Image (cartoon, rainbow, N blue to C red):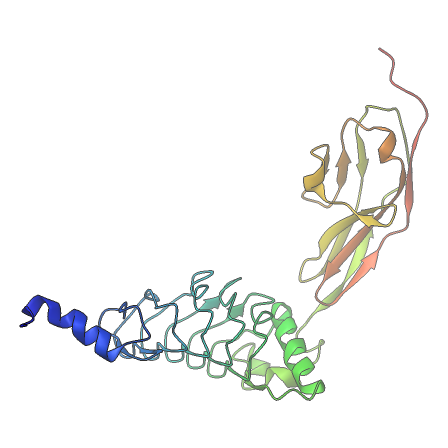
Amino acid sequence: MLLKPASLPGLLCFLLLPSFSCSCPSRCLCFRTTVRCMHLMLETIPDIPPQTSILDLRFNHIKEIQPGAFRRLKNLNTLLLNNNQIKHIVRRSFEDLENLKYLFLHNNKISRIHPGTFSQLESLKRLRLDSNALLCDCDLMWLAELLKEYAEQGSSIQTAATCEAPRELHGRSIITLTAQEFNCERPRITSEPHDVDVLLGNTVYFTCRAEGNPKPAIIWLHNNNEIDMKDDNRLNLLQDGTLMIQNTKESDKGVYQCMAKNIAGEVKTQEVVLRYFGTPCN
């Protein structure tokens, strides 16, 4: 039986890539579970077969990694993204890659990396971030702490990450920097809340302002439990850190405390009390 010419590509795909679903990206080279897409002037990450264990995207023009770009690649072991034009690593760039061992990101233009970017990489053995444009300010201190944690635990993870800026830290290994060199500043409270007596159904404001570097997040506690504003639309955190409670009710009574927190530390205000002295007149 003679095969028609149109059927030959499918036969070749079946013979050469028995473990793939014959979905090799255009112009890439695929063999078994290895996908190589080097020197193709790619600007975005192509669709990759889910069985891929080695993905080589070196020497392209990739500028960003979309969140979840590699989510389907449960078997990915090696990811080579070096020698591209990546500027920022955003949140969830490498999520669900629990089998990834080798991540190469050197020779890019990376200046910012979102905190926690590598926290899900449970199998990581080697991470390269050298030869980038890393800005070693307080926003990157989390990475230094992570790399130090690897070293202190006697981890076999090999890492490389160096500062590009500021000028006084140029060329320094991130793992050698102190909190002072990152120019981090612990939060400090500049305006404290005060006790409040209120009529049921009225609106209450608890003031809290804080400074620090980076700008601290404001968290409110009620009876030592963190308040989740999403649980009750009567509660609002204003832009300046003030807690607003509308249409107050009996369950709002108790002790309130403000906490200001950033990567350099946290600080709490004095505890204050919300009390009721009656119900509003009709």
